[in-house]
Image 1 (cartoon, rainbow, N blue to C red):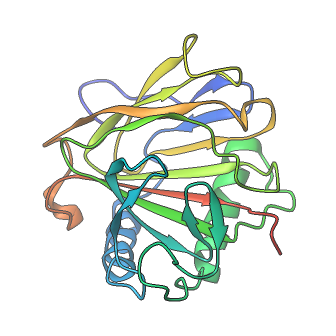
Image 2 (tube, rainbow, N blue to C red):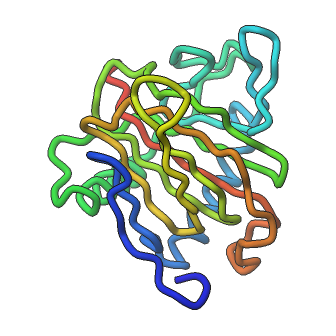
Amino acid sequence: MTGLFPRVRGEVGPGAVHVPDWLPAQRQRELVAACREWARGPVPLRHTRLPGGGVMSVQTVCLGWHWQPYRYARTADDVNGAPVAAFPDWLAELGRSAVAEAYGEAGAYAPDAALVNFYDGDARMGMHQDREERCSAPVVSLSLGDSCVFRFGNTEGRGRPWTDVELASGDLFVFGGPSRFAHHGVPKVLPGTGDPALGLAGGRLNITLRQTGLG
């Protein structure tokens, strides 16, 4: 809970579920420590370069499959050519627990890729769809550190209608079903809102789990 009033679970769209405070503090600290290890490599945390020459303000490291605009590969050919770090079984189990929390059951959810994004106070993420996967299984999003404004839109385009949701450390957001290909982004990070005891010296970490369908 943050502030004076409890934040409540909500369905932002059909199949898009926000569960505040889902991760207990100890699990958050464990995830921050894991992210710190993943950021060291074999493929280090980096600013992704877009095909048009622009560079993303968010820094990213991948597990299982390496994402680069706009495809997945087993090696980071746009960074150092190294094989991507393995996707751990315990993270897949956490993903299944997250989907079960959101929908009541996990079904056959089997995530095999993760994008770990680090936002400093100035980083943003423009409206986009997660559609490089060959599978329509839900996307699981876990937030750590500073809060952010998460903008969840529609499947037709980047414009309105959208809903702005404040995601705080420990929050879970799952989107699947009719909302699986909704546009979404992060227009703002709220610096100084994270708990220093988390072990993150400022900024926001976001772990998104995906099932690629790539085999």
